[in-house]
Length: 298
Image (cartoon, rainbow, N blue to C red; front, side, top):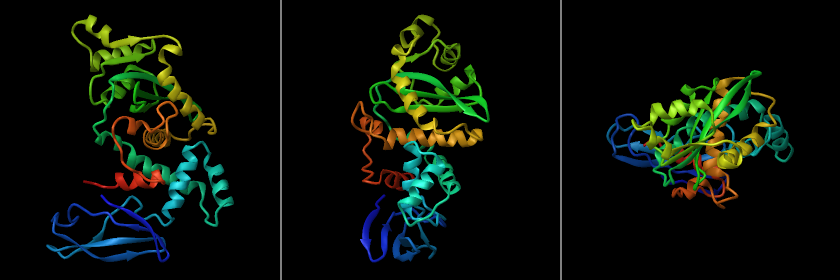
């Protein structure tokens, strides 16, 4: 994939993403066929030599009328701790452009779905030493839970799961999203983790499990994952509660993407995904570069 950002006439963004095949007939005989213009972007048009159809590649901003800088700026403001209305107030105050809080929420839903499983495409160089825990999330005045696993050395959020119950089935769903069995897993004394571990990774000999699965008590013994939860609390403290569980799931999923790909971790002085051996060269506007990369279907 290749994309170019440059000042050319009034078009600040020139989108050039080469497709692997024709979306109509799946032919690989594709040539450039002029440009498509709208009020914000100049996009490359392609033509299939086999079926003669012309098309443009969806670069992640399909049917979005606002400028890409506006969308990514609002996502950045929200993920850095502002509420929806505070982000709108800040943006409208320092820009001639106007957005609404519902527009930002719809962008969060869109890119939450788009980027939710994006990091699973990479072969990450992880230490295999995992810490797992859950955090209380208030949704519709009820207790819901956000479960997560973090790699000790790279600080990557390896797996996340949102549920309305704090039980072994939810912990099992968290573990099933992990590609490989951990070399060591540290959790608190919640019995849900013990039951889920035995179902997913348990050995016939329980002595082997004791070597890889460690249950601890207190903040210091599990402070790696607790530090992540402090960052999550910093984000959600401006929200009184979530209005719907699906919205909470998408927002927290997008936060995990922000944590892994966008945010510079103070402990390792880089993003966790870079520490895990993946360098995407996202550029100055990391949200824009990440959406470009994730929009590539093949």
